[in-house]
Image 1 (cartoon, rainbow, N blue to C red):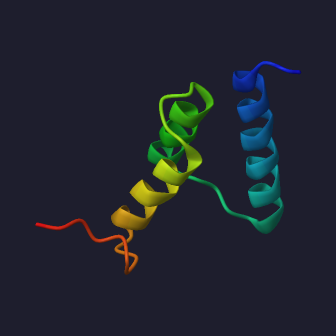
Image 2: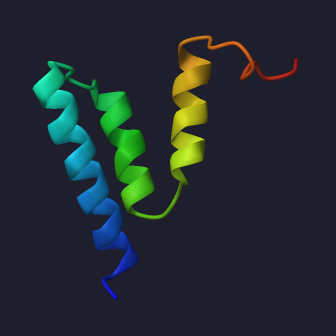
Image 3: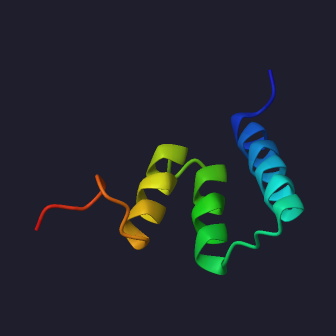
Length: 64
């Protein structure tokens, strides 16, 4: 079995390659979130949640 960190890095590299084909270029904030995922400091669900909050996606509004 591969190192979990390397598995996460491979997944992110594949994600970024797919996005590049579609013309999407993530900003540095998103890249930083992906790096936190690679390092094991966040899950992908947490990354998605933070992005949803940043864009005001319904269902992910934090309670005040």
